[in-house]
Every structure is written in C-alpha cells, then in structure tokens.
Image (cartoon, rainbow, N blue to C red; front, side):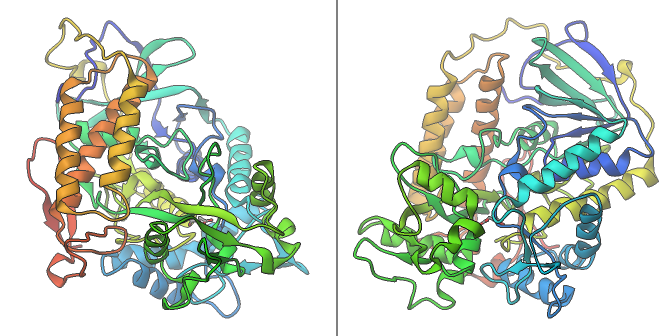
Length: 534
Ligand code: SIN
C-alpha cells in the first residue's frame, strides 16, 4: 500500500465540489451534539458513512455516568475516573468531565431524553470501579438508543444538513498545511466528492472491528483516525484498548455486549465447574475492567466462563430487557441458565491527540468522542464515562470553534496528491480475506495479554499484508486499508511500552513502572514512538 497523505489517487477534475462551513464527521453522540451546538452560528453538514442512527452510541447499554445522585459529587466522580485511568489521566480533562457532566446531562434531559426513574426520581446503578451509584440508564439497557433518538430528533428540527452513506476517505490539505475539508465517497451516487469547510470535526468513533471479537458494530473501523494520521495528525495512547469482560460467546451468535451493569446489579461470574472464581480478587465482579477481563481470559484456558443472572430472578427481564431477549433468541433463558461470556474489544482510550478544546496539531481539524484522545480516560476508561465524554468535549470544541471562526478555504489552495496522474495499482481482490487476517492477528497477538514475541510476529505479518494490499475505491476496501494502517500503529505503540498499565498488559513486563507514566505519540513519517507528559 502506498504511504501517502491520500489513500487513493485523485485530482480536482474527478470530484464533485461541495461547500459548507462546519463539517462534522460521524453521527454518534459526539458528532450530533457538536452539530447541534454549532448550528445556531454556522451552516453545519454532518457526513455519516451509514445511516444516521448507526454508531457505537446506538448500541451503548449500561448508561451514562454523571454525578447527579444525592450522595455523589463531581469530586467523587473525578477521583474514581483518575483511579481507573491507572496514572495516565489528564487531570484538567477529568475535572472538566466531572464538573461539566451534570449540566450536559440536564441539557439532554431537557431535550427529551428519558432516563429510568423510580417514583419520579432518577434511578442510578453501580458499575465497576465507581465508588457511588452514578450511572443513569434508559429502558433498562438501551441508554445509547434513547440518547441517539433524542439527538437525531433535535437535529431534524434544525437546518443541519445530514448526508448519509457518505464515506470520508481523506482530509483535504491546503497549501498552508491546514485542513480544508474532506475527500469522500458518496455511496448514493458512486461519485467522489470534495467538501470544503472552515473546520472539520472528527467524531468518527473507535476501531473495535480491528479485532476478531468485539462488542462494537460494523461501522467501527477507525476511518477518521486513519485519515487524520495520513494527513499528519498526531495520535496518542494507541496501545490502550479496553476489552470488555463480558460479551456473549456462543457459536453462531454475534459477540453481543452483556452490560457491566449486570454485574453491578448482582450477576456473578462462574467457571465451567460452576465455581465463583472472582472471590479472591479485590472488588470481585466490580474490579476494574482489565482485571476482570484478564481473570476471565485466564479461566477460559480451563473451560467456558458464564455470567449467572439466576439470583436476579425474573427482575432480569425488566432491568435488562434487550440482553434478556437477545439471549433468549439464542436459546438461553437468563432466569434459569447462565450465559457463556468472554472478553471482547470494546473501546479505544487513545486516538487523535487533542487539547481540552478538541484542537489537533493540524489547523482547522478538531476531534471529540472515541476517536479523540485528550487523556481523559488515561490507560483505562471508567465504565459509562464514554457517553459523557461525547457530550462534554463536543461542547468544549464548539466554544473554541466559535471563538476562532476561521475563513472558508478556497479550491485553488487545495493540494491534491503529488503522484497524480498515475496508473492506479491493481487493487487487491479480496478485502474480506485481508480483514479476516488482520482481525485474527490483532486478537491473538495484540489482545488482552501481549508480549514482545507476539507483537513482533504481529508487526511482521501486518507488514507483509501492507506490502501486498492495494485498496480500490469501494468502501469495504478503503476501510480495510484504514484498519491495516491502525493495526500497525497499535502494534508499534504496544511493543514500545515495556510495562503493564490499564488496558495494556504485557506478560513480559507485568509491572506498572513510574518511568512509563507518560503518553505515547505517533505521527506518520516519524519512525519512532515519542512520549509526552500532560
Ligand atoms: C456496558 O454497558 O457494560 C458498557 C458501558 C461502557 O462501556 O461504559
């Protein structure tokens, strides 16, 4: 595959030209909240590669953590987030998250979000590593769906342009090296489009699909992060991937998330002999996610692991209706039968490096939500902090963008790829086969437990795939190129960090070490991983 700031060759005559003022990429919580906040002052266009509802947000079950309960406070929320982040949280970002969270959540409640209540009072649940019950939920286990529904309804009331089925391939760079817009494939027309804007806001989500087993939907292929990396954006903390301890693990069934809130409400983990194997671990089922995921992983060497809901009785149907129905569809009645579970890739703590106002190292490029990294989650995100992150930092970005109000870029300033026209290389025929290989390598060598030998093998095998792969202009093929790019980035960061911390566990360096209390930074064209303290 070519190593260039554009994935495919193109020139200005090939593309349909479009303009807007604010270009928001992605339609999960972060993208939609950004679009809403900007819409009073700017012409806003949202580009989303599937339909507007399809994102990680839509599938979020457990809830949204926020210090609104009577016995809670932003200080407690701050403390728990810092503790979960394993020494790598950006203190300022965590303060902003905890302190501004209540106002943002009140705002979406005012927009119509209905969180579960008891006698007219909000109901809060407990999740791992939270010292208080502070997780709001909706319809039991459909929190993301409720929030997404409300945001989409609000978007429709405003003059925000939403373009569905438009896949962003790359960022357009102008002759000053600033971001000027995007190159996109419009799957409705089959044409390439070039969108000019004053600013581009990446809210394209994570990259769970790099892994064979993931709780994430199909759209999570890291496209925004890969495009930013090609354009020269710095990426931070890419070695920190969170593996959710409990996804459905049943032959023929998707790795559907079984929310952590289930353990918060009393569901217990058991091994194939029916033993409660978390008893000896501090905080047991509510230990941090990486601890529970590794305990399950180790137990799975001996046999299948199950999550046992039986002590919840029939309450499981009302508290976790989606999980209950989904398991029943595969023949498992949770009121009588423990469900087989295993860890699965769930969340990227790293992403495009941003400051607390969402600014990247490239002018006019901002990022928020899972694709961004300001260090708020450190090495390990606290459960249910991701939806809150999406709201709080989307809002912070819009304040900065409004203050800056950069001019619209001009067509003549855009710099297309230098190597055009070229005879396009023969595209690799089989993106699916390539993807299977990538996902297998990432799962077996760059997963829950890593070591130098496995990571080096992963690097070698991915390099071979890189050499042999050329994308065509179909979305699937371009997604695979992005996944290959990001897999190599993750392996490089994981190999470089010679310690274990949060979501990054090295069996050859099992200790957390003070000298590694710093953030990794990677940039295209720079061969080594840099480290910074923030
Ligand atoms: C869950 O419901 O367990 C997922 C929530 C999260 O990832 O924060």
